[in-house]
Image 1 (cartoon, one colour):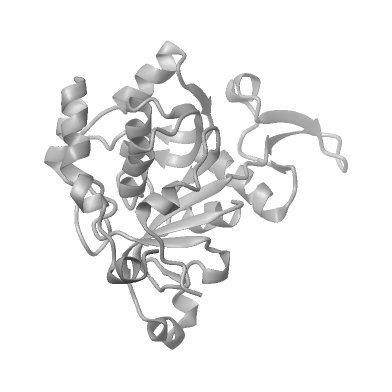
Image 2 (cartoon, rainbow, N blue to C red):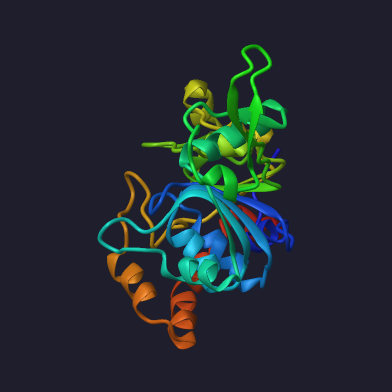
Length: 279
């Protein structure tokens, strides 16, 4: 089944207030083209899920698209400093920051993937997070009676991941670190994939064990070369230093509009199949 769709059609599946899992890690393989289209579409009140985020969450925060963020870490890598727009949103009360450890986000996703309501987390026994984050509770171990911390399951309504290669049926190939993308995707109700390159199904059949995410789990595929810029994609391109610094330097609306316009034509790329068949 050919699951190729346009970027606009894929983004139309995101509704205001949805819980959205975002693939990638910090400044690497984030689905930036998709998120920019989310901003252009005016989506609001989104609940973002991320183990370690940076420019992706900061973009949504700057655009006023977020209601809350559940994450273990939101900050740029050392050379760029803090995620300033996310920080402003949390400090002003516009964004609810549900602080986790990266590990506890993963445990919450594992619970959802397993179809259970919570997951015990051995590594979080003494922490202020237990008291300030509603996702954590202390319960008695039914076997020993000892106190154990548990985290509530997180099941995103949809997760978006960006990959190097994918076939038309949604079978994904990820080169380099996979981060938590596969776990987050399998914990989600729907999965949207954006891909640098669409490959023939014969490449998938030659080595099925290389498939990071099987097509039968994927709802739709969008072909977007350079779809993670200004973040990096392993083996293809590095972080766009000037773009990241420019985004963080100037708070003006004019600067933000210029940033969005810079990628507008690139983000609207449509593969031959999408144009040919009007998908």
